[in-house]
Structures are given as structure tokens and as C-alpha cells.
Length: 258
Length: 211
Image (tube, rainbow over all chains, first blue to last red; front, side, top):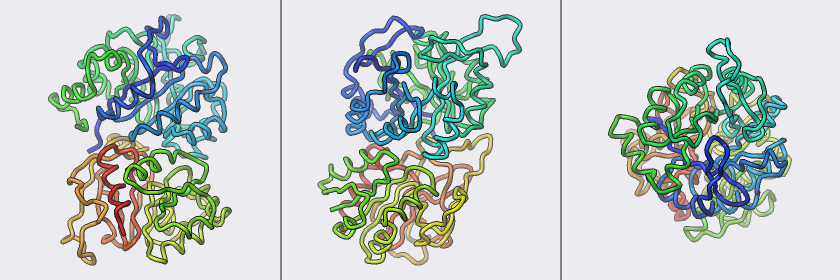
């Protein structure tokens, strides 16, 4: 049986792993290669690496760092941040990424998703959706969340659910869905947002943003139907190990790999 | 020496690193002349079916790869690298497969409970030798691998061998499909052993240990 995935996420800035609250107020969490190795030993189901400032500062993702991590882990590895074209994707896959996560460039040029999926296969193209509750009133339910680009700095006016659907239609193999309202708050995932996206697409959805307790993971994987739960703070700062999270879920009947 | 074919399309670091961990010398290459020098060959699975076939033809690797297999030297195809061995794929728009194994590659049928791509960790159900009419010994790559072990999948297509006795392990995703195929010196895996932590490494260790 296919299991639900538990995915630690390394948010990167200046070569270090950091974690903020609602995309700001970043706190240092350590050396990425060392942290990646620990998560591999703990049998994380996957590792996500996001160069969170790349897109904004127009920098390319840190290829060398990706290579250093890839050489040290034997689990699936997704990399995002600053990807603007097919050549960037090719360089990252060559450096050791298994999947690439695209946000800003995909919104600016949706055909990039289509071209990349045709060239490299849908299974390695992830569309990252950073969603925030829209301030504008009187929106239909599915239009409630708006997507942001450039690391959460630029609103787009696009509805998150519609965009996720379009990403899947263009050939994305997975949606990495981050709630900007809940990110780093430790108050739990945005279950309503996650559920809306899960129901709208027929590709896997990775829920991100808000994990503070193991119960939150249970909720997003069961009540909201996410295929994977991504978390940073609760793992980085040593509160819970990946194994503890999986044992908790297994006891409650969620299929996980232990 | 184990040759790892590099189409220039994707990640080969993990498979190289894993093989080296078990004492193998590796050579990452896209040069046909290198293949003959190597006793074993790994064809990793990245990119799209048509592109991969075209690239194998363009570089001249295709003939050397066929020779390698014909000479009974160990061959491991991973994901797309295994699918290419079959006669055809529903993913292909123009190219045919290498037709080294009989059968075809088909798309996973999407249902509400089986999303496409099939992405994540799923279990291997080993086919015991008594179920396999033509084969008398268990698959060497599964030595010391417990039944129902979890491995990492990331694919939208799966192989349907014409001859079921090629199937050494199945995985259930909507239906039971061939996760490991094995015929003489040819091994194919639909999942990624190089991404499957300890269990996957065990299988690669077994590949390194083949004569």
C-alpha cells in the first residue's frame, strides 16, 4: 500500500538552513548537508530544499550545495527556488535533484510547466503554490485564497485552487501547497485550503505550513486528504524525530513506512 | 567496472555513490567505446521515453547496450531505464522500445484512490519461485531483502511483460504491476533503489556482488 509521506524541508538562505514565521523573521537552523544526513538516517520519506531568497534576489539556486547534499543521501530530493527556465531545471537534475519545484517562473510563464513535463517527465515537475487568504470580500468559496510569487512578496490576483488545477493540467506531477497564513505559526496546517486543492486535482498534494504538533500532521493527512505532510520547525529544532512522527501516525491508523 | 549511462538528463549521483559504497568502480559515460570495457551496466531512469531512445541512438550507445546484454553481462535498468527494454510504450509518440524483453509499457489508470503519478513509498511483494514456472532460483537482487519491504516509486507508466515468469516482484497500486523484472542477466526495477535508503542499497549491493 502506498504510504503517506513525512517530509522535512530545508529553507535555505546564504548557504544555511533557516526558518521564519509567515515567510519572515528567519532563524538559523544549521548546516544543510549535516541536517540532510540526519534526516536520511531517520528515514524521512523525502527531502525538500527551498532556496527561499533565490527568486527575489534573482540568484540561481546553489548548485554546489545541491550536489553536496545529493551525494550524501539515498532518498528522494526535491529542490526549488530561483528556477526560471529549462536550463535551470536540467542543471538542478544533473546536480542531484530528483524533482524540481517551480513557483514564480511557472506563474509568469505557465508553458514552462508543459515544456518541462514533456522533456523531463511529469514525475519530476512540482508546482509550488504559496497561498494566502484573499483580503477582498465577496469571493466564491474556491476563490478564497490568492497565490503569491517571489517568496511570498508579490500577490498575483490568481486563485490558488484554480492555479493548482491549471498546473496539473499543464503536466505537473505534484503540488507543493504552502499556506502563508499558517507558515511557521505552529498552529496547524490550513486544512480548508489543503482540502480544497486535494479535491480539485488528481495528482499528489504535499501540505506545508503550520505544523506545530504531531496531531497537525494527522489532521492534514486524514481530514484534508493530503498525500504528504511537510514540516520544518518541529524537526529542525529537535522537538520530534521523523520516527516519532511516524509512530504517532501509525498508532492512529495512518499508513506510513516505519 | 560498472558503467552508468548518463543521458545528461538527470540525477545519477545517488546510484553512483551507492555502487561505490559497496566497492564497485564506476564509470559515468555516454561514450559507446566505454561500454565494452565494463562488466556491468546500469541504465538509470530519467526523462521521457522518446528523448531517451533518441539519445541512445544519437550517441551510438544503443548497439553497445544490446551487445552488452547479448554477451550475458549483468544489466540493471531503473525506472525508464527498465521500460526502454520493452517493445513499446504508451508514453512514446514516435519511438519504439529496444524490444530486448517482450511486452509493453502502459499508463497507470488514474482513479480517485490511485493518483497519477504513483509517487511515494510502496511495498514489494516477492514472487516466490514456485509461482514462476520457468525459473528455479529466487531473484539474486532480492537476497536478504524481506518480503513487503518499502521502496520509492515515482512514475506514471509501468511494464506489462508478455511473459509473467519474468516478474520477480509486484506492487499494488490500483492493480498488481511488475515492480521487478528479471531474465537471465537482465534486471529491471520500476522503483528507485538508489532512493530507497537501506532496502534499496541492499539490492544495489546484491547487483555489485553478481558475477
